Image (tube, rainbow, N blue to C red; front, side):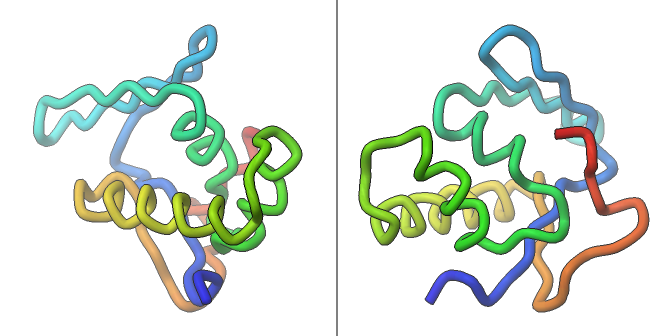
Length: 103
């Protein structure tokens, strides 16, 4: 149901993984976003080649919830990040600069 799209980080942003948090810097809008817990883990899994189902399969190892519930939560979170233009979605896997092999 949620696996239709592939997700990539917006390459115009800067971000850092510091301690147990991820900080996303949107230079264009002068905004800094702090991700903790589940949001941090989702962000670190976004690599341009994974869909929601693939991200959920990785995170289900960490969180004690059903795969369906986790997929739904990831879907809502990614839609929110997409609304903020922090991530991009495509019906095909991303390539080139949009692929993040850092994590």
